[in-house]
Length: 112
Image (cartoon, rainbow, N blue to C red; front, top):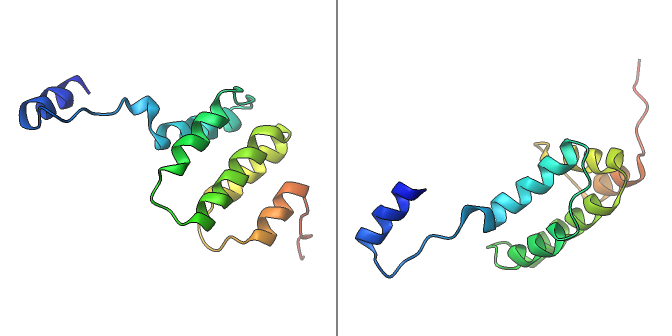
């Protein structure tokens, strides 16, 4: 980052790089790491993450869904939070119903 900052200062002296730890991406992935490692996210994590979410180039619908995920993942039990995280990071189709099923822990029995 020091090298990149030096380049930016030389090419665009009026520009300043944001501290990477203050970005939405970093804060979101820090929450994911806390959940995945079994730690309860710190009390200050959620408000700072939600503040960064507001400035993201996403639709209001997407921002509301992400805010709901962040809030629930921060307050639910670690098992439920991990299930929500797995659902959030999976590829393919995700739905509100699927999200709710993950919150309550409802599973479809496996067919043999």
